[in-house]
Length: 432
Image (tube, rainbow, N blue to C red; front, side, top):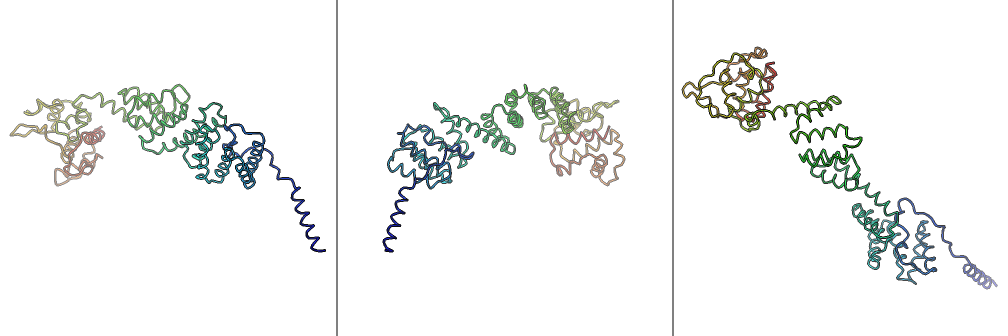
């Protein structure tokens, strides 16, 4: 009797199980923000019979609802009966992509695209795999390809905008700290993504100025000049540097004077430009002397004349001693002035002033001190007594707060025109 009861119970259970309704698919749901670009695998696929489409729709709803097990079970059942139905295969790829199994997902996508190269959903999946792998540029290129196709979903264009912004922000951030050539390349790419960005244009313009590509810098900045950013300090600074690059110092000085009035940090650069402007208007012999890497006594005489007001405008200058090596010297008048003021001497036997003699750091220290003493610098009276001529010269320089070239350049080192000019500017200040 007990055995019969057990058999009846089992039979009833089987019957109830057979009569139980199949698991109903969840209602249609929208994918989350992170998954919305894994679109319905049927997009771009040929239409399927109604019954097959209904079975797939149920499987896809389970996938969107997060019931992966039920979704996979139904997809496998569909493929068992319809092995060529590509949306079911692509839906399996979507499951793998969401599970971060990108290699397996890509394998399915590639297989599907080999069978249907213009399969919109599969192309989008391939782009999303590239993005998940960190290759944003590749993802953007793939999306652009999809966007060029007829009837591309609106979602494709939205994704392109997002990816362009991501790449733009990344390039702009990297350009801030990159070397000038690398930054220029990055910023050009950034502007290809967003031509309207004033920030990228201004930074690119500044980088081009830094590499002395002034014409290109102006072309890049032109669109900014008609907008609200035209009067920004960094824009005006770049424009001023472009003007300097083209030799228009007066225009640049006007811009920098406005900038210095707003912000005192621009004042040192303003003074540099004024000095450059003055140098650009100097005679040929001065420009040659200041650019020389190893100056002669004739070069130094030119720099003395143009850098030290007390020499250039000295009054009651006596006749110079006769020297036989000054007539064919570039800067003859400046050399004659140095001889007349006693800054240079003439060899009593050869009657030569040594115009072509190279000036070293020791010679420059002696000559700078002699100028301070001969032109009556008040600070020179504070110099200490030293047992040697060189010691006394260096003491004069120290008392007058003039850099000692022996200390800054090294003993007996040759002197460049710019180094000598810097020392003579200090001498000039001490004499004022």
